[in-house]
Image (cartoon, rainbow, N blue to C red; front, side, top):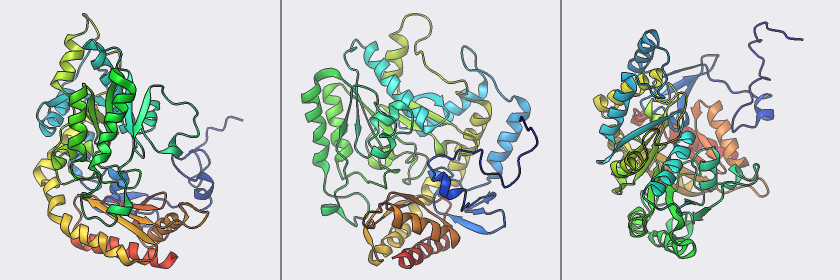
Length: 441
């Protein structure tokens, strides 16, 4: 029977939810119906303080009038235009605004629709670059254990989170991984960047010794977010940069989480003092009001691919919605907000208070580590015997029921609030989280 009647308001069957326990949720739904400023609101009108900026993405807070109006205005002017062999002005303006924020020389912008697409695009650009400069043997891609680069097969292959891979069989060939930098024995409860672990970057020299001149690129997150907030050791990224330069390898930063003010600077590259060849971004680019991602490349990478190709299409890659008019309008309005309100500066100003508040949880039962940088914090809990992830999930549910949204990955509670957060919000967020940790101990 083809029943085209409107779905019932409480019909939860049709939507196959991503990264969710669908069976549990559909018997115990937790719903969000509205958002404004620092908060979500449930269908019943109950306020939920947002401790995660949605999903690391609503950096300017929710329901920003400037972004809403820009999208509405553009929808009335032109809903869609292709960018294959055609253009529309607003996409070029959006790219220029992004290039104003990226590090000097990283100002060629390729638009995508998500962080996952940005990761796969960056990897393809790296391979195209190596081929264009006569290094066709450079086909190998290096990621890092516990790295997350989205859910496309390229990013998933270079990524190093086992649970994201084991369900899908073989990944891309010619991929290898550096060790992760998490070292709780030496770095537990570090505030900011840990002192120990720079030597782990030297593992890239071992991979060069193993694979020779077949490595095209290394992709890392400046701060590994989705795996539970792993902050790079002092000097680690600088050493990676040195080894890549020495061996003709491109360095790619996945700045999907660390971009647009999250670390108190426009991008993580600025905060950490090491500039890559290629950067991926998404999330905060449009404040998540319209899906959009981007890849920013150095002039050298762009010119090698474009000028080194025969006449015609230089890069056989793209998306129907690359530079979508509504997404471009949202990006322009979002980046204007970042400048006008100095959101990175606001993050820097409150970071010391945020850091002390997060580390106040050190004595809470079951807390085995706390990590932070910028407006990110990870609180790691001891797993229950035989039930990994259960303790943190109980914290997540308890916090939601008490009016605060946190994110959990394994047994780590990850916090990444909107950059407009103020001290009373911090107190409420950390206080509610503390109560939840004590309640489920």
